[in-house]
Image (cartoon, rainbow over all chains, first blue to last red; front, side, top):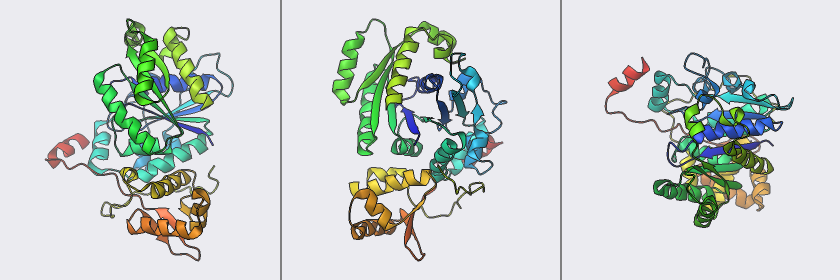
Length: 254
Length: 113
């Protein structure tokens, strides 16, 4: 059975989509077939990192949820983002959510059959023969998030070194424990270089009793890139990419 | 993973369908019942959406009679539906994601144009 990984944060702006895309691409580079599905229907964004805009997204998760296509028809092969060092088996696919305001409004207004999302995950894994499926979730707790957490093998929770994030993460950790997620990791993002990363890791792990898979520093290069590409593919030797690689290894061990 | 998958496109539920199961219910169900529902969600994901009391009993490591009682309790709560066949089978009764109630329909109409 392939591994399903939900990447979540209680609050927005933590770098969730950026992390999902970079982590997924790093796992793919290691010789895996990887899928990313953007379930953040209300505020989709991960497609931007793969160079997609409104015109390039012909089919989306929304089309599947409305019965207009099968989920595999909304999946784009984005393996072109992978470096030459990737193996023959390496592949990465993206199922974006629609960025059209009318489509977003329709989902918010009319709702959709959540069981389709559940079945869609399985069909996507099956149709694309995936080793890993990454689910980019909507921040906070809602029905899609609970579904993703429930069916995931691994939950990666992202937080910033910020009191609001700390409180919100506590709520999510409590819910994930209640739902008995098999494996949970925390990832601290946007940590300032003046911080003592070792002490921060220890504090976070003691607070939640959950392992910290990595601490990502706030970097100027990442901000400069501005979501126009995958940082880890562009700067593979950067310390931040090395942290992501380390997290990817932990995810692959499961 | 799912050799008997239907080639048909997914069908939308009618908006007037009764509420049914919501993932939010997982947070309030007793542990034993929650585990059954979670397992059924995973089974559904791999194309095995209907289960028997015997299969549930094997999963939870209890007698079939106990599994049957728990399944019936979930049916009573409206979270599962029982399919009347020779052998009783149970299926998640998914509800539609809660739609939001806008103050003015005009806002939504404008957005959907």
